[in-house]
Length: 168
Image (cartoon, rainbow, N blue to C red; front, side, top):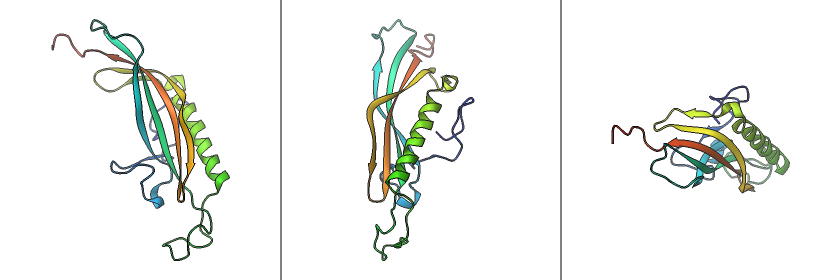
């Protein structure tokens, strides 16, 4: 999502920014919330029965991508409220929905592109062999100062059950 990985189908660098560790897209300051995101894991499912003799285990990892958009319509704040005037505003319903839909489309296109799958550089080995959009948790909520896009994804991964039997 940060635009630093991919083959042929990628996201431009700087389009999205991660939330700091002590904030979420819903709590980050409104002046800094535009396209701040967090990946929230929602579940893990084994795709085959566990067997201690298996070298690999297949999982379905469920997660939501949550993205904030600054949403301030002209005239929605009193003139006394710091920084906002009667003519301030960078969005309306159509504009924020268009940004959110475009981002969701581009993210799904990038994540589900087969050449972007592969082995993660972690120990033990994790190989992502498929991403799919999920029907769970998809929404765009409009609040007074921001909109929050949530959409679900599923990653199908293969992991090693042991790094080395010799070390055990």
